[in-house]
Image (cartoon, rainbow, N blue to C red; front, top):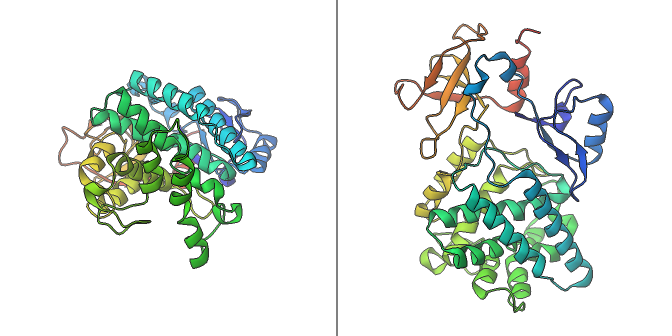
Length: 373
């Protein structure tokens, strides 16, 4: 499948995954062939991107070589979790009372499903409407943090504390004015000062909830602290930041930079990998960061890449811990000639070959114009 910006959708494209609104309403089912009316409807719901069927998979023989794209949690589970978080936070905005039970139940069923799929890697980003960013972000950060906690050997008790705190880490944003929260551009100094109060707001709300462990509340308090002490709000550093918060800080930034935002398009996974690695020791705990990044497919399945030979290939297999050396199938030779039965290359064995470019969604669409009709 291929992520395509909503503004670049074209009639005839086939939807690869179900498309939902912020409140969980199914807008379009997978396999729907887009018509102009479909595209207009998606744009009305302010969706930034959509997954469509990869135009190259139909032009590569031996499609059984493609791994099935694994999901850490099922689509239905993610949609349900986002709905619950959305509803619970909206109720808080109206009533100024936080019902913690929905969050506890959501954290519990996310943990169970993640344990069932513990070998899966993160290949896909979750697509959301702009006004639903915070709710989907909370669920994604919970999933990513729980995966990392498992890699650290956490037992169920610690996983529950971590998952619940991760799910609630942005609670304080419910007290930030919407015009600041959804501003489609840089914040002013005054607006940023208000935004940077959300960890305090969140902690103040959560520490009053008897059902929320205090360490879970500290995730909301500390998730913007940095490993070198340059974060906010208390300039904590190193081991003074609770390990749960160090985990969530990494998941929070990764999901933010790989998601479409009102003011920028998402970074590709390999770009996020490079950004995150550049922040090791300053922003992030380097040991936890390495564990986290080992779960991320830097070149996700069905990505289109170019080798140092000039050949263009599609990613057909990714192994945990070896994400920079996936298995590829050549689809264009070095002269730009399209191949339907190109050779397979395992980069863990072909050590003189390396990826020097990954095609952006827009570039993939342009490249697909060279395919035979």
